Image (tube, rainbow, N blue to C red; front, side):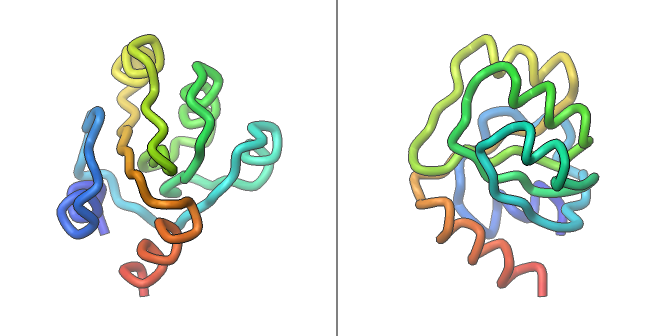
Length: 109
């Protein structure tokens, strides 16, 4: 599944699609950035409610396919601009984190 496929199937709102052809190879949900750094993986669709600049640093470090802000979180312009500089896909949804993860899991099977 690509990031473009995810956006189309989910109806979630793209904030920034720097490269929507990125392949999603897994998923990870977490908000404690040090924990995510140690457990997230390349190609993940990362679900979080964190919306500070450090999210972009962790996303870049792991080279995730996309970051999905759940629970109605909307990142500010500084976060979006940093994501643009590093070609990181950003998506948002009003869905609870758990529900969003379950949806992705269903599509990944």
